[in-house]
Amino acid sequence: MRIADGLLKCVAFVSHDDPTPKYIGTTFMVGIAGKYGNAYLHAVTARHVAECVEGGPFLIGVNFKDGGAGWFQSDLKWWYHPTDSSVDAAATVFTPSDRCDVEGIPEAAFVTDRTIRDYGIGVGDEINVVGLFTKFYGSTKHIPIVRTGNIAMMPSDKIPAGSGQMEAYLAEGRSIGGLSGSPVFVRHTVKVGGMVNERGEHERISGLGHSHLLGLMRGHWDLPIGVQTEQAEAVNMGISIVVPAKRILEVLYHPELVALRERHDEQVREQ
Image (cartoon, rainbow, N blue to C red; front, top):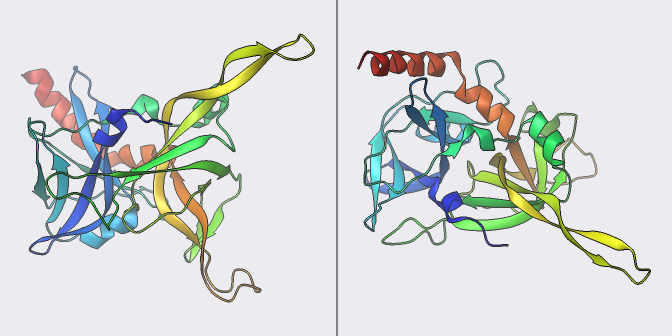
């Protein structure tokens, strides 16, 4: 299924400044509305990606509207979940130049409990993961790769991950190096038409709706040794772990980030 071009434009690449770029993972842009018609752009990635570049200048690679690509150096702080360290998500402020060909995902596109109810999002719905492919990412432009799969499980219980447990969705589809921090989009199933069956009855058929942000890619399910006694070693079983979008929102509404946006809102109001 063809995905919208805008889903490709929300993605950027994260790199060490070492001194030449060394790709670490994927980040994506989220737009948060201000109070006076203004808006804020935040770069979101996995917490474990942010921790790799935290403490020193890092680079965010984006494409330009007039062609080509470039790197923006930043030493800004990454914010994590204010109360739950198991949430593998991080956000920072990103202020692009007018040249940047980037689009922020609106908050309204985030999957929440209400979205799941209203659109009937569930197991089997198609997902698209947009992010960095470390084997080829372009030479003159940053070119993301798109991997597809399906929601495999939406557990009500937390899953074992690393040394603890976390709230997550499980997806059918392998995660590879570089996809950590990538946005995961889901297309909800809708009824788009119908046909008359052999009994003369009208049957509706299923199709795919528009995309919502399901969450971000944490990585593949790498079950630690000892969690299952019959398992000899941690393996990639083709199941990926997705941090729910609602938990990302909790990071974006970290009290310090909220205060930062409110201070800038007041400057906009005064102007």
